[in-house]
Image (cartoon, rainbow, N blue to C red; front, side):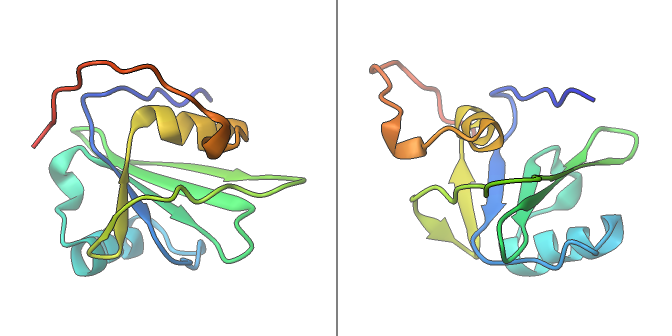
Length: 119
């Protein structure tokens, strides 16, 4: 399955560790309780386990929740260094793609571009 990432969503990454045995309802509860966000907003919510070798992504797709779940056989996912607000890091779809691809975030150099902030 291919995960499609685009700039029409906001991406919230949990700043701590999450028990990834949690399913749709429990992760939605984390979104509401810890992120102070509404899980039906269409935003994307990202969770890592303690060893950071598993990632779960929760997304409301208009008619139901979808979960993307991936376990690395080798290596770990990188946590980006960014501002933490209500237990969540707000990242871009580019950063999430780099994290999933195993790209070292500090090695990425981006040219200046105009970015419209989504509120």
